[in-house]
Image 1 (spheres, rainbow, N blue to C red):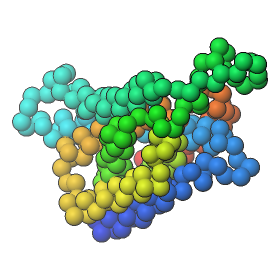
Image 2: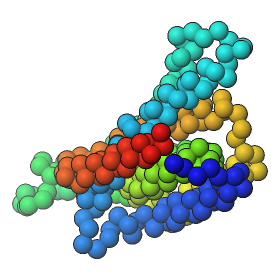
Image 3: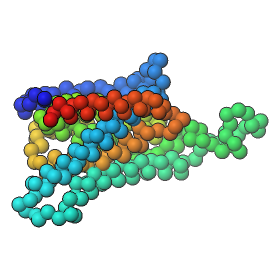
Image 4: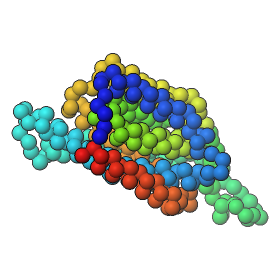
Length: 283
């Protein structure tokens, strides 16, 4: 069974978690290139872990938030089938916002000129017919600074929401909060890869520092103005949940050429077993 934390203990615990997640953001490029560990292995393992988290914890958590909203509003609004969809509409909004940002970045990449690799000899490795591939792009043709700042800002809000709700997660269950932290930490490593691919010259150490600062900023806001409303917490969790869903399936289910189903299955199985064990203990 979980030990119940006081408000002060949960704030301190959330601060330590925020520091750990911030450190993972800063170290992400090194983690992705660990010696003797192929990036496809670390990426696939993290993907399996995150997918298990989505299906076994995140989706049930959003459903519980829907029940909490119904109870909170039962004295004000008569429950209706439409109201039951409210929390899921918020999650859908979070999903759609991040999908729109990804599409914007992709469209600017495709619209940008590329350097065709013209090899009259048709040597090995040259694109057929001189057509340039994604890897042939000039780094200077990546999406505009405005798109980059918008994309980075959205991830800063995303990070701040994670740590803003962390103290409450610790109070409701230490084990689940720790498992959530593990899932998000590995998820950040792959989010870093996605941003680096979209913005190879713009996303530098400064961008990682901004993402790390957002984690600490979310914790600071929660420490000063702790979330107390069940309704607000449920809505923020749903918004974060929709964003996590999109980012998990976008970053952690990569193309088959850079993934390993064995490592994916290993991460999924281990994390599913942990979640199942912790759930059984909490009953």
